[in-house]
Length: 329
Ligand code: HPA
Ligand code: ZN
Image 1 (cartoon, rainbow, N blue to C red):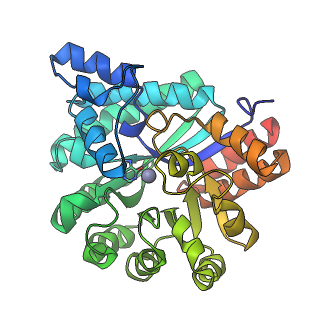
Image 2: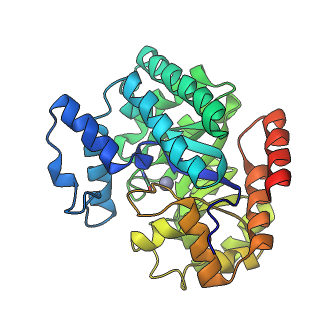
Image 3: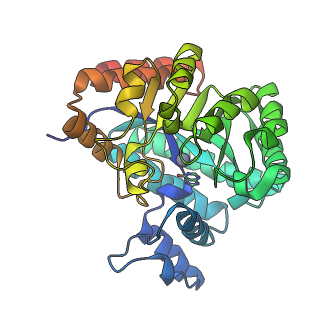
């Protein structure tokens, strides 16, 4: 059995990381950009490890050169997500790839993406919200520029602020200014931590950046006192098991700490991260949890409930999605 048509909410997906390889190849051809080195013989993305992944990701992004490319990207990603049963999606958007942090350029990109999201909602029945994300390895100064873009374009579509990129560069506190600025403007906060960093990185992120949600957070499982703290504070983890296994952040589905975290009372949700890069989809994530953990519709209904409560959306959207879930689940 496959969970393809089962309704799903997904809170952690990097928009550019959702680009099918054929989509990026098409743009490269249109623009005469030679990026054949980032593909393997089967046409998939090719990289050796996480750092190399980030470089290949950035090379793929060089083909995304204007608002029109991002309009097409949003439509391609949402069509694929909807085909995997996703009815509500939050995606990380990086002004670094959309005009480099220039506010007026960012507004143009955002306009195109917002239009595409509205079209996809009509055509595929999927709702999208955007979380503006600074890129850690671009440093704290660029993060401030990105946070300003977030504050200036916060609204019905842009609802959150976060940070991705090379986790081991710098410390969370280096980015506190940007996170404070975003939080004070009313943006909801999430941050990648504990995918590559240890429990100390998760603890510092919680202390210095005060996120409501953490991207991954899986290495918190190495410190049970920290796990209990996360559970008590009600911080939600955006867990991406297929990504973690593919990138060797954990050894296998069997050894993945998501069950330990959940059993100890942590609110967990499940996402794909960068689906074509990790050869996954939301359907595959659900099918693998069913196969490896014996999870069934009752477990998945709980994941959906947690994700809906943790979603960075307004009350009206939450209610609408709740009704949709009720009808489909
Ligand atoms: N992790 C961290 N940074 C990223 C990722 C990811 O999976 N994808 C794009 N930027
Ligand atoms: Zn991620």
